[in-house]
Length: 203
Length: 179
Image (cartoon, rainbow over all chains, first blue to last red; front, side, top):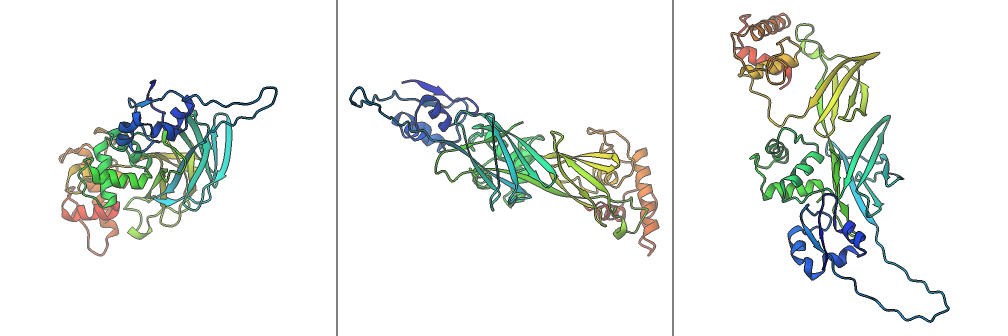
């Protein structure tokens, strides 16, 4: 059975699309049970994880010759969902343009400050331009690069995204977050921190 | 550093959050010029840039000189405009609390915020070096601050002009700097 070694930017939907599977087929395959147990979220894998890719079953269909037959390939879109906040409050009705794989997708954020768009499964990067008044906010996006919450990288990424300064070291940023959230300001990454951080970030 | 965004499989309830922190910055004249309540610099134009140089905010101060500055990704730059850029400040969210006002570093940081000249020593090159008196820069700036506060506090609450940061001077520093 071929194996796919996870690189930064991979997640189950991109790997599945690359190998011609639906993500659920891979995720629920017995050979990936251990990975599923470890990561829990198919959207968040860690570089070095291994996804087993089962051999494809051959499906046989009998059709008369000399006729035209239509076969439909099931494909599922990959989605991204981003919530934009200002001082922890939703940025509602903001116009945005998402540039990905040469396409430009425009829209505006909903009442919770959320934007949700389909992207090509193979896309690894994009640019999000958010317009507020006369100002443009430009975000370089790296799809599939969010690391699991139980790694230091995953904690660092989530804190940075919530607006904490991680350049002065992770313990300081953890402490700031704990203080703001009314947790005990230990500067240590523990389960209570992970749970709260996950809730604040959204996964 | 690009922003990591997880893809969502169909039906997932998860999402990615990008938050911008906001801090209050007060643009003021130095303590010796006006009474405490009247130090705000009114109608000053400003803009805020993120670390890519994109302008993410612009506006004009009100009577209190307050700017609700947006800090994108932990650091932004505040530019004061007067036809052209007349001042630029890099504002970084600090994780650590401000140094205590009883320490030399705490006094230096507040004096610098209030516009006093304290030199360019220290790890950040901003004069906050934690070196206690006798230090020429720290002594002189404390004396200047005491003189300024004394001139304003005509009611008799004046600090002794001794260039020593005693309890009364420490209180006055905390009040003036707002931290």
